[in-house]
Length: 501
Image (cartoon, rainbow, N blue to C red):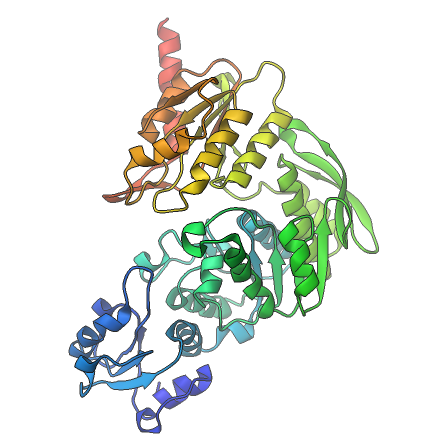
């Protein structure tokens, strides 16, 4: 594709003398540059692509797109195109390179601190039940029509990334177009919005779940975090917003697009008369503007009701009948690693809940939900840690919440990344009530094994923080780590020990 065609489709300016240069690939990593490609200089969080322009030229890049020209590069073999924001350009150029897939899809973006994954999964189930071909882009997986998984072309660019980088994101959207997808449900993070990853998309609907403390290592203040989230509502046709959240109420008063509200008390769509059914979930009255139905949601927790209400409201706004919404929600298993009850043998002697809760608000809501369905005599054993290279101030808060709401707390590691695990544990312990039962086991595998082997009859073991993840990240990199397998292996040892007694 010629520069003139690529930049024309992307709506970007270019020097006329570069118009006839042929481009067959766009890359942002100088190590992947091949002759004839376009190299985008991106200012990253840890490195600046402008510093690798020389390497890209030596490797045969035909065009360098940058925000500035380094003197050492002047006079090189590659043509230079200067742009004000290369991150925004990345989204626009990759979308153009892959045939402008965003114009051929109805994309619903879901943002918020918690609930993005659950809402997107529920939306996918609801729209598929209505006969639509759907795609999903999110934390747990990326899927095209019929649930076909989309694998990353460059694994490193998608690793541990809720909203993929533009190279992967727009390639996936193009594949969805080829697969006949009509609707795409996308988790949109504050990072993706702040870093312009989705700037090529006009979202058909933007959805807001909530805003609680998280990612302050990146945004620094809650105000900056909110402003990043709000960007989604400047690039959408309409919005569905949780008005029970203070930030949601603020959004409703400022968004310029048509918006409807969801609420557990009073909104355009409401979940009323919630009756908890223990581990069986909740029954509630789903009230739409012109109709209402009763739904028996099989996932426990008030936050699960809010997620179902939000997804149901979006579906209803697209004309999906409430009767179908009810049938679908009453059959859902929810998102993997979100209030997931691990299926164990009846004689296991304990129950296990796996959840992704890794923020103070999510951990509090998780434990409150478990306390809501536990029966008399059941003990809540919480096992959790905090991620490395992330907001340190939330660690003490999570320790305080753990002590207040669990009967026994096991503090352990959770993706320590580049940090010293002991330093993270020390931060958590600042919030732990030393007068209440707790223990520290740095090795997460050993911590899980110990919790299972020492569990009392009818204990509820809550494994918080990893959810769907099947890996652990430390200074040495990423390692396979599946909590479900660890629990089942430990149960075998528990039963074997019991049989020998």
